[in-house]
Length: 496
Image 1: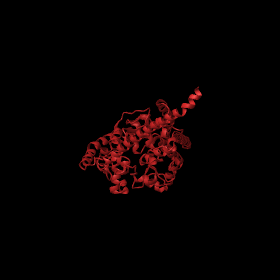
Image 2: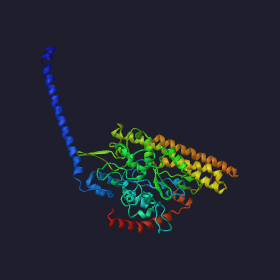
Image 3: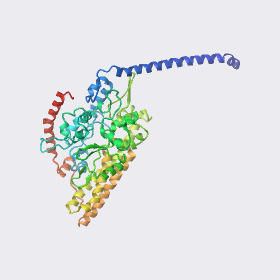
Image 4: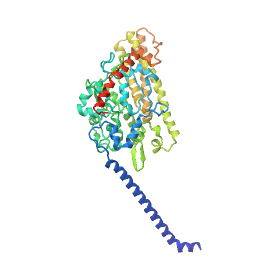
């Protein structure tokens, strides 16, 4: 009976099922089409209903915000200082106060004065002006310590001034001469073309570096640009020659050893160490270079994939411009690809950081000790010939320490490479100490075991002949007398 029933009504049932399936499919496709049309209309309306026409270099992000309120609102959240991870977050912290060995490592260099953990892009100008590393003529007994090149990554006013003056004249200007001009923190004009909103390179240094290695940045894909706009600033760089021309040392490649070979070939040094007299290199923040080596970079991800995850609002999909640690939004960043729980992902990142910082915390005091012992060897009569190989080791050790430490997010971006770099730095610092034992022995001395008390930032600064109270007083005078004039001039000119 079942077979007869199946044979009699089967085709009829199948036909009905097919008809229903087709009808449902048509309805679903219609809904999808309507959704797509709506989303396209909403997206198009953003461009078709602009409130202001932006052309040229408009450094004021609030003007862009009139056309792109969603992006602007999330960018404005870079002012928040409410995220704290196991290690920092977006809260300003005194790094020298936490790790005073760094005062010794940077003795004779402006970073020994002041180094704080970075905050959000909202604060780039405020933190640059407030740091003890910058000063101006006529304040206390200080001179203008830095060139205008130091402003390069801090503001969209920089491309405007480079366009006005030319890169060469801008870079060689005194830092304080640009104070009234550079007043807007990192924002829209740093990365976007004002007409098309395409990502664009606004800093000549990256374009010039690519040209020297035979690469055309204008042929980069959109996915590559989602990292390259960051690589305008979050990279290793130096100030070349008396003109302090901003230069990326990528001619030999992007690895630590490639850049070290470049610097050695050019006989370059950032400064001579005040204690050991070693010719030193100061790593800036080689974030992009390390990211390229790490697992996410190798898989073709971009900086924006994790630090600027997409957000959907109504029919509009846009990037979150808050630019904070991905751990503050694990669901929107990490879990787009990874199916692990939020707790497991955070634990994984913390494990990377714990292990790398264990090596860092071994390296810093040993490297500081090596600089101090070298100063003691100098005082004991050691010659430059005796100390040259030791100074080479100190230069190499500190380059590795700084390369691994100064890169924001290095323990996550490239954990294996960063561990290798820091481990080699520790090895070279200990090699320098062993070589110093031979120098002391040659001068009839035991290696000193009693070292100065550098347990606080203030004690370490006094040891390297720095007066922290005088530095603070000069900065207070600067902030009270010079900065208000800058702001008054900028407001009168409509630059803010």
